Length: 96
Image (cartoon, rainbow, N blue to C red; front, top):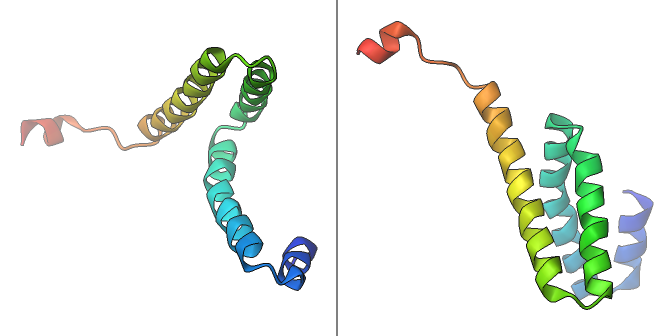
């Protein structure tokens, strides 16, 4: 068991353990995206820093706009990956 899980479990705080397990589970999807599209990590980090900067400035509209752009960009990367790695129909497939 990784140290962080051991420490969390030792806390006896079931809500904390459940919340952290949920967050860890959600992180797997992000790690998958970064493995498929390694360049996306730097873009994502810049976008998160920009969102945080807007939040600190109390500019909710800019933070929201940046967060939406971030989500759409990540989605577009996944779509592009699957389009690049999907079998292309042959002439025979189109004829049937």
